[in-house]
Length: 95
Image (cartoon, rainbow, N blue to C red; front, side):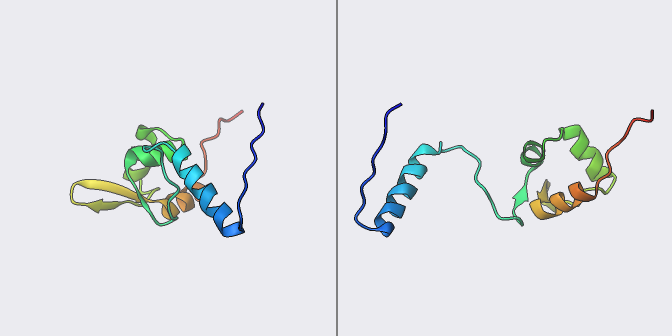
């Protein structure tokens, strides 16, 4: 493995250089880390929380996960999804 040496004349220059380098490394379509109150589509919510679309739809119908309807589209607030996930009790098989 080759070693990389970065020379900068000040911490500010180093920070700018790092930010520019990381910005170039991230692909254009990569998901961004959003604020806790950002809105997620169904697909984004499923991908982020590792659940299926069927599970999300059932949770939505049963009132487990609150949602926001804007026109004909449905969105989920990230912070409220996290709260619902923390309070959700998983199905457990009886022994």
